[in-house]
Image (cartoon, rainbow, N blue to C red):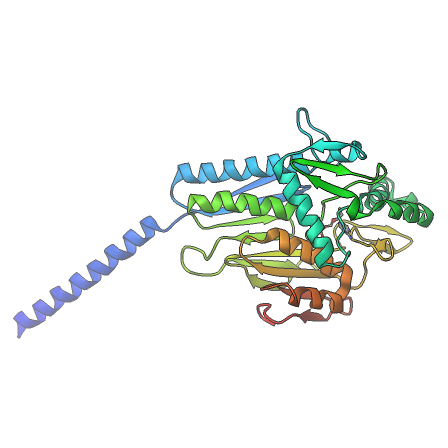
Length: 345
Ligand code: ADP
Ligand code: MG
């Protein structure tokens, strides 16, 4: 009897030891969470989270992501030109001429033309002339809030005559703005395009990651422990909390709102997303978040801006016609509206 108990104790001890060893080795190999932040690109803060114990891989991930954002930020910049690069600022300055450009500019502008069609003109990257007037007023308002004012409606009307997307002609490695008074503004999609390119590079390294570029979040699958990456959608009322916490594993989520980049005149808030139909800031929603499966940060970015302009009804129709996408609309009444497929609806 005593002998049998002894054997049982030994067997139990062996099982416990095996479990302890397994736990210890799991702890030793569980991928570590590494983070990096970049502050100099796309006028926002970009954060990268990578799970890996391989220091060389983590270093490479940070370097490759930063190199990608740095290069595309320079190419897509509409305000500054850089030595030896023909970027969008060069294209705008040389409107009326044909300019040789990088394939990433061609790809972005081609996508912009496609979004013009899918959004029936709500998203128009050729609206630079109008957007510049709003941008200048916002910059002036930040410097001198007391004397802030919206653009003169007559100036907006005049600028709107120079926003025809058909005057953006894409050639073999070159771009021509046929109207010398027109300009491109890719603020609605450039960041998303860059996030997709960075994600492709990061995915090739084989480690789970999350990229957070201002309002756009992108991941390449689940976390190493099998749980979902979660992205919080900020409360547009500015209370500091989240209105939703959304699983974004293997997907991209983008939020557009007017509560961050805006200025106020006589108590009225003017946002940075402009409705081409009125030439004034869109006002139907407080924020719109769009979730798209895959490395689709640009689609999510384009759709969230377009839905913000189109409002709940037009936005719902746009998202449902777009395979796999779903949206959350935060309405001024405080109500939330979801399209089918949005997590937690
Ligand atoms: P954020 O840059 O704050 O993430 P969005 O992705 O929604 O916001 O894009 C807003 C930017 O898009 C504006 O700052 C402006 O540069 C540009 N934009 C505003 N209205 C339009 C429009 N109707 N069509 C195309 N681009 C627009
Ligand atoms: Mg956008």
